Image (cartoon, rainbow, N blue to C red; front, side, top):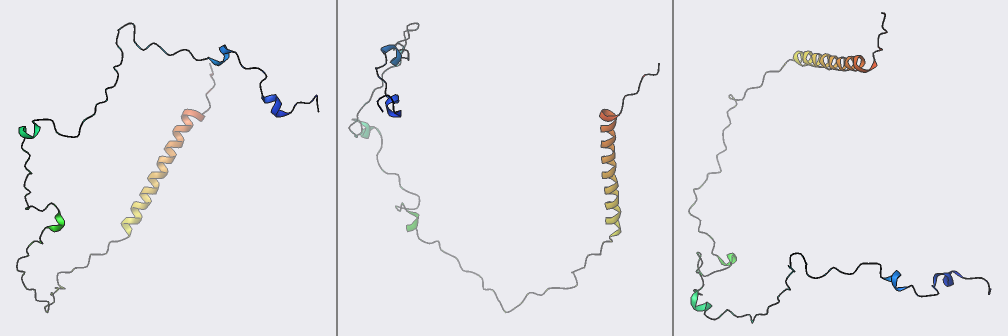
Length: 148
């Protein structure tokens, strides 16, 4: 055991690192810009007493503004609006529905649907065939050999 080193012994450095190895970052730049002479001003923290400046109360009117609905600031305290008299509705009469004005719509024939469906399918197949023909002529058609 005297010649063997354990893992914890290998991780511990035997000597402190040199000063050059520790200071690898450059120093901070100077506080003032030497070209323009400008530097950021220091912040100013001010404290106030919490009171208005002297003469402020005399300069501006401090009376509260009256509300339009009276002195109440909350809408929950407002009185309910007055409701005027309502006409009486007689519920004993039932509305009369005239059945003469109701007409049934004429039944449309399904022949037109079938004709347009067939024409649509034929048109779609024509577009697919046109697309395949364009692809064939542009990309897949063998080049003719010169006979001259």
